[in-house]
Amino acid sequence: MKRVLAAVLLGFGLTAGAVTASVEDEIRARIAPVGEVCVQGEDCGSEAAPVASASSEPRGGSEVYDAACAACHNTGAAGAPKLGDADAWGDRPDKGLETLVDHAINGFNAMPAKGGCSNCSDEEIEVAVEYMLTELE
Ligand code: HEC
Image 1 (spheres, rainbow, N blue to C red):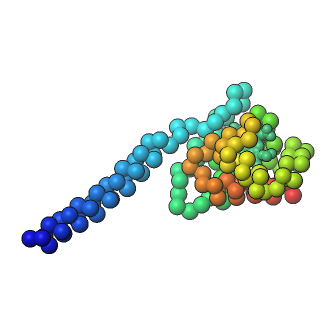
Image 2 (image 1 turned 90 degrees about the vertical axis):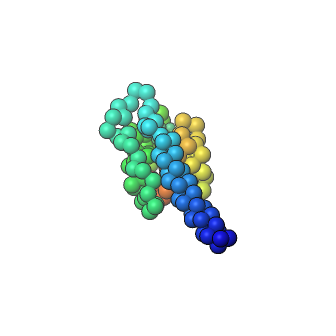
Image 3 (image 1 turned 45 degrees about the vertical axis):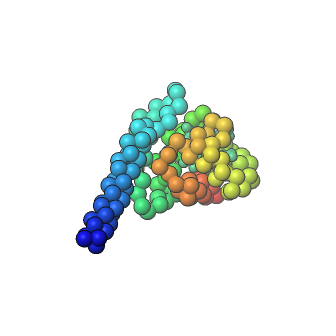
């Protein structure tokens, strides 16, 4: 009898774990941002395409950039240094990758934390910054 009870409890425990995980997924989907940051005065219609939902594989630098950074960094919105525009970037690269990544992750003046991409991992933000720096070379 005890063994049956143990098996039942064990079964319940496993099911409860699985249920919790799926509820967590659901909550995560529900609290995902409904849109991207769009600076007033900019036509963000097509460029602010929703960021692809979190996948298990980290996205590459240009992929993250196109999804989360291009809206501002292609246009120079709000004073964002434009992609590949060495003049606009000025001496920013001299701050070093670590500082630039820190600013991209945590925000810097008008630069929102992670560019507003809440489902971007720190690693994905880092490869996006690296991509932006290689575009200056
Ligand atoms: C809402 C517009 C906006 C989005 C989206 C955005 N940026 Fe920015 N970004 C800015 C602005 C504005 C600045 C300039 C901030 C300043 O120097 O005051 C900036 C500056 C930066 C800098 C330079 C920081 C420094 O220390 O000089 C980096 C690196 C950067 N952004 C990376 C990113 C990355 C990576 C993404 C995408 C994940 C991104 N940005 C998305 C607006 C944006």
